[in-house]
Picture 1 (cartoon, helix red, strand yellow):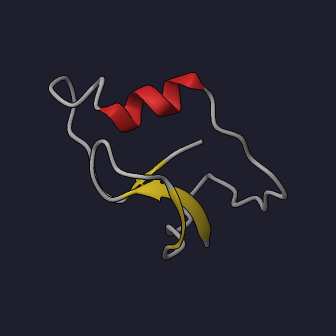
Picture 2 (cartoon, helix red, strand yellow; picture 1 turned 180 degrees about the horizontal axis):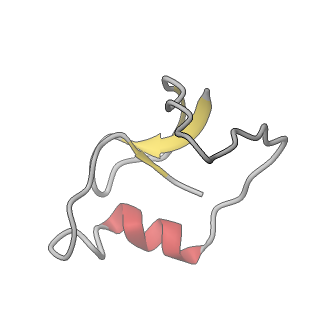
Length: 62
């Protein structure tokens, strides 16, 4: 799947090819044609929650 993500805090967001996550029981997988970034996404890249919760990189935005 393609996703806009960063590899580290304060990194430059880029379009990446990432593995598709598995579909869990009781959930659906949908296909998106477009997505957007909002001001919180930029704060997340800057590390606003860095000391408050664990993060897994690459960090997918949007």
